[in-house]
Length: 120
Image 1: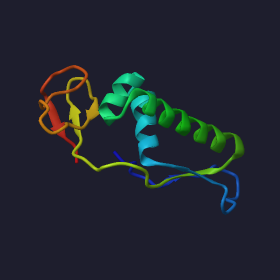
Image 2: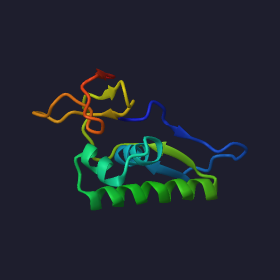
Image 3: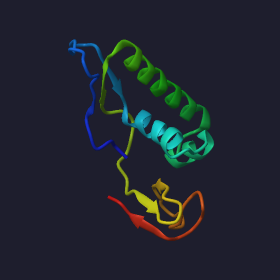
């Protein structure tokens, strides 16, 4: 799911053109799944429909970019990347957000319950 905002800017610093850190949508999603929703990298890779090593590369990239922005006082923006917009669902019992692959059961990939709501 793409972020509902365009980025971040540090407080108390004047922006310098070209001094911006750009985070791709798949990097944002990797960070959200592991650091916000507290999934393992294997669970997150499965939800993003990518291999575990590919997920690790994406996840390490976004963490390095955020660290650079914090240390150097750079602004952060979100842009493009390799992604497909899909319907998103939320599991009512465990509050997990996820997509459902074609032909898959309409249930939460984590707790396997079918009490889900579309959030698009």
